[in-house]
Each structure stands twice: as C-alpha cells, then as structure tokens.
Length: 293
Image (cartoon, rainbow, N blue to C red; front, side, top):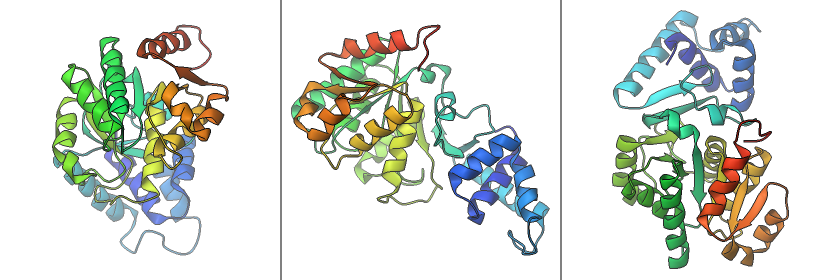
C-alpha cells in the first residue's frame, strides 16, 4: 500500500455513508487523493461527520486497524494504489478497494473467468476442468468464485495443472463460503490470491454475490459460462461482462436456457464448442492494436 493515511481516509469516507462506494471511488480517483476528499467532506457542513476526536485521531485509529488487517494476512489495495488490479481499474463499477489474501502476479493480467452452476452436472464439471487446464497450458490465470460445482472444478483443475488461480469471494476474508471450501481457500491464498471487496467480517448475502460477479468480470479479459440456470449468478456475470466490454463465451449446452440464447445474440457473446476457441479469440482481441480487451 502506497500510503496508510490515504487508505485510512478512504476507509473513513466509505464508513461515513454520505455517498455510494462507487461514487467515492470516482471522487477519490478524480481528486487523486482520499485525504483531499475526506477533508473536503469534513468542512462541507457544520456537523462533525467523523466524530469529535478530530481528523488526525480518526485516521490514526483506522491506520492502526489497517496494520492489524495486514498482520492477519489481509492486504488492502485501494484504487489509488499501484497494486490495485489493472483490469479491474478499467471497469466503470470498480470497487474503491479490494482485500487480498495471497499475492497478485503480473501474469494475472492474463486472467479468464470460468463460472457456472453450484449444482453442476458431471458433464459441466468435466468441461470446467478441461477449460481450466487448457487456460493454464496457454499461460492464463483462472478466475472463479470458490462456490461449489463449476467454480470448485475450475479452481482445483488449475491448481492440479500447476497454474495460477484467483478466487473472488462474496464474503469478507475472515469467512469461507461454503464452509467446506475453507481448505481450498487457504490453498489458493498460498499459491495465488483470494480477493474480496467486503470488510473482513462481512457475511454472505443476496447482494454480495452479484457484486462478487462484477469483480470477477472486471478482473478478467473474458468470462466463460459453463452451466447456468436463470437464477444463477453466472447469468449476472455474463451481463456485467458484456457491459464491461469483455467477451462472454457460452458452452453450447448452456443454450438450453432462454437467457443464454438471448445473451448469445448480443455483440461480444460467442458460443463455443472447444476450449481452444476461447484462447484463439482472446489472443486476437488482446493483440497489439486491438480496440477491445
């Protein structure tokens, strides 16, 4: 982290609740300083926004809290930090910070998300494994959401192949969801990274998982949907990825669902029959001089 005071000011702003988190991300980036926005908001009105101890005391207390998070293995990266993921920085709904357990690598800029149903068929599990193995063989990092089913298959196949994988979770880093994936979460943190946009103790919620899907899309050059019903979070991620200008790949089997057929008709979505189609298209789109990521 570049500056504890800047990070502390951003945390204070987000906790104040005066604006949405996406608005604060934009305000802080525009100003180039969370401290500047913090001081501006403190002086905006007669009411004390951050308590009676004064700005310096408030930020010192939060900086101590940040140090404790990092001592626990949870590194805070704000939108002002050079360690904030570049792919994620490029989307309009980027979170103002992420917590990392583990470490990102330069190679993670070449990341592709593999997502799908929690209640997956054997065909879907086999397809997710084959896709993850192919991506690792081609030098890509596999991104998924640590859920049961397709996510689990993608993460474990990438690890077994000796590749990198990133888990984007819908809770704080102190939690594991589902609980039976706690060991996998620890392994990914030791060999790749676990990423959360939520406070460390945040529990799972209906709202947190769609937000997690947005971060998965933002981190990735493309999203591959292996299996997904109408109510699946993968359907949400496909929509968000297209909004981010990132390609979406749908397996042919997903087309049994009406939402997938509608998605496949949109610009940026492609139906694929084999893993090598994914990397062929992504390589073309990310080649020097290409207009889109």
